[in-house]
Length: 111
Image (cartoon, rainbow, N blue to C red; front, side):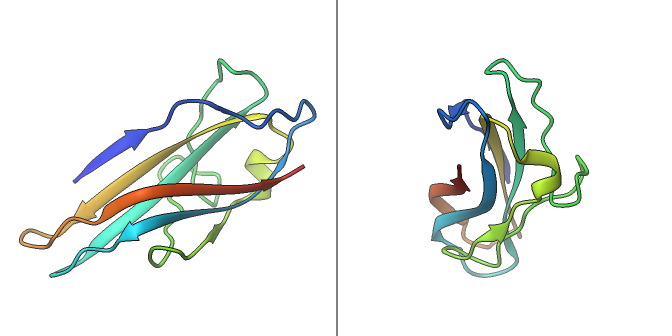
């Protein structure tokens, strides 16, 4: 089990963007319950603040795609019209299971 916080990404759009979905690519792992989940933080400043939230705007909630290559819709209420973003990815697995491997994380956004 573990987590990783990304660096800051700049969309380059001064007025901010619409964040649409988050998705991961890789392998799910086998032999038990394996979970890959995310939180997203967005800001109009490259320095933050960085409030990592799930789909209901709660810091204890997570975006949890059902598997690799499956997008999860991002809450527009908390993130739209922001220029900068970061994500946190969390990987959890049962004892004896093989660990999921996350190769890419894709944040879909539009101007």
